Image 1: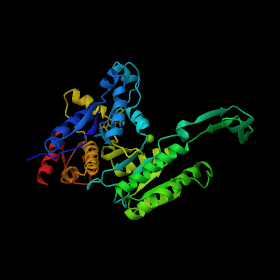
Image 2: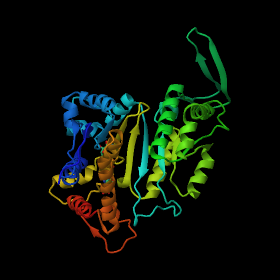
Image 3: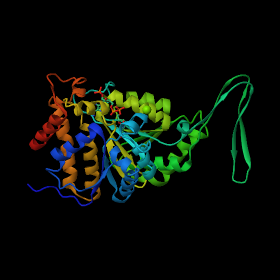
Length: 401
Ligand code: NAP
Ligand code: MG
């Protein structure tokens, strides 16, 4: 059987711990036997990041800008314990943060739905994709603990030294004060990523803020989205048969709970932080959540939403059997391959990626799954497989499709 050809390589970013083990198994069992896999390999494992003073991460991100599509394994974000464990030269920054600052994108997280793992919200039939703005607001705040009586002001000084000043509060006693900001450039790039991703996936786009209360700050988000939609995306949305819908955050929450799902929900930074955890846990498992960074430049980076599954890795190192779920990592690969196939006009590649997704889901629906899913499934008589055997089971299903 001849293998499926590729033109442009994927940027392949390898990672750490248990997910690094899964990464290799997935390539060996599910990809290279069928595809003439072309990748440019960057080892973002912590050891290599340390050896290269983290230049490897920046190189991988820069190359993604040129090649257009990347697939990334989960990586360790070092903390004090990791600095010791890996004898690091310094506490290197989060690779995802570095990549995001180079590609300037928005992260879209989508649950993978499978029969037998039911969402807690019964009427959710289709996945809800959450798009979180990843800059500013309370995550870049300045705070003051007010000790007692006095006046708190908001001050802006322009380049020529002219001041605009607003009284926030005339304190009669102790209290608290906070300053937050955002930029039109960042909001515009967030909006562009959201509109592009909606067109790409043919899903409706919802956006919500609290503009009735925050008449300048949140309203600015609403206006930027609305202007951009009118000027650049309205015709394309109409042609694609999808809608853009703005509503208040509290109304959005109520409507989402009653909906059938199937939309992209764009949120400001804090709302996105809170709502993405709600949506992902309501859908069942972090191991069933994909994540894609969409840059306004039209560049894509696919990964799993979970981390390196450290606890399982230590078991693996101790020679014990693990049952680590590889579904989100498999879907990171299929997402990247589908996109590559689409961009390079290689329908065979896209079809293969879809078939692999189907094989993965059918394997679970047929009652063969990893332990994390076995614990929450509504299916009966399930067979719990170890990490390697699950991937092999997916391969045997793939052979039958
Ligand atoms: P984690 O790797 O997501 O794992 C947390 C727990 O969730 C695991 O111990 C496991 O529970 C369960 N779990 C997660 N993924 C699973 C899977 N595929 N299959 C089965 N169970 C799964 O988070 P963490 O332990 O907090 O972080 C470990 C490392 O990952 C950290 O160094 C962190 O910096 C990094 N991280 C990287 C990324 C990224 O690269 N995108 C994201 C998050 C964290 P049980 O142990 O109960 O089985
Ligand atoms: Mg959070």
